Length: 244
Ligand code: ADE
Image (tube, rainbow, N blue to C red; front, side, top):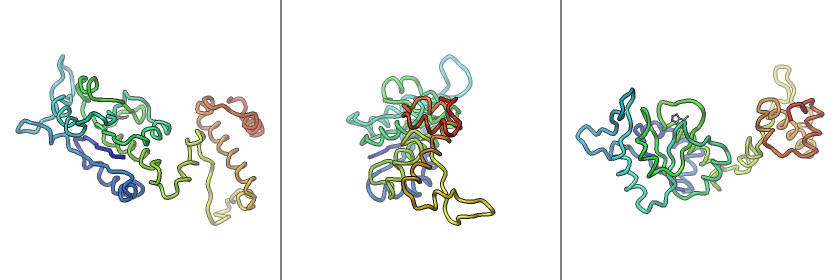
């Protein structure tokens, strides 16, 4: 997987790309991330990449010229999947991150100011993605969120790949509670079942808690799932049926 990022503030991405799973994925050649400064494709002596909006109003718009030139260099065969990070995009989900992790070449375009000239979207962008219903000062942090979500599910990237498979949202449920030693801390006990060594009971407890947590915190997520008769029985036993 190769990811090219086109940004006005590339330095925002560097530290996160050099840390943890993203660092290891790159060292293991599972992932190559190159961050480019859009100003490198500006042609005037001030290296300007933005201009006033036609029709007036506040804010600046990223000009099409430097972005088209950059994409001509980074995507000459037009085979890459070009993603523009914007609050107007498709909401990022685990399923979207997992499907993007199967691509071979992504180009992430980070906006700033009022965003890009519409012709960039019309001609160059494959997919627009939003990381949530709020407005960031630019797309760099959103690109980082996307790279992180993709990087950790790349086959072979996460040392303990299984832990990505069973975490929140891979089963479309929120995660169950976790505990480590000591068994008693400041008067608070670890649930007995987790100390029992009885694997089936532990799995059942974890699944019940994941269902309970999802029902309580994110009922809309649960509405979308096909619950089995057993799931419904578990929810009923936990007094949570009215949510379904
Ligand atoms: N750029 C600014 N805000 C954003 C958001 N919420 N998601 C993606 N890109 C953005």
